[in-house]
Amino acid sequence: MINLPKYKQLILFDGVCNLCNASVQYIIKHDKKDAFRFAALQSTIGQQLIKEFKIDQTKTDSILLMSNKMDLSYKSTAALKIASKLGYPRNLMAFFLIVPPFLRNWVYDYIAKNRYKWYGRRDECMIPTPEIQSKFLN
Image (cartoon, rainbow, N blue to C red; front, side, top):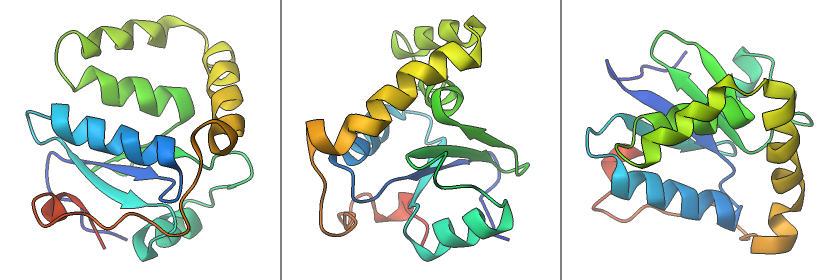
């Protein structure tokens, strides 16, 4: 069990995916309320949560959002909930939560399946700069 700071949400992301890393950088830049903390799925915390919540990584391998109530959101739902916290106009993306998840996740899965081919991948997880280190859980 991790100790997530009160009123923070944890974004678990694929630490070797260039698209995922660019998305994390974007979220950090626009997270004016400091709502999010981050951990790579490959990290110790990421692996601990995967085991604890019995997450099938063959079905979910790119983004998860966890609240301090230990609620998990997956795929497009996680992405849209994150966008909803990033202020105007990004928060308007939450409108798409009314679209049935099977439709949203079809688009999400298509992008996730091709993300390495389109955006590349790293050999290892990104190392946060000292300026943003406090936003990452080890």
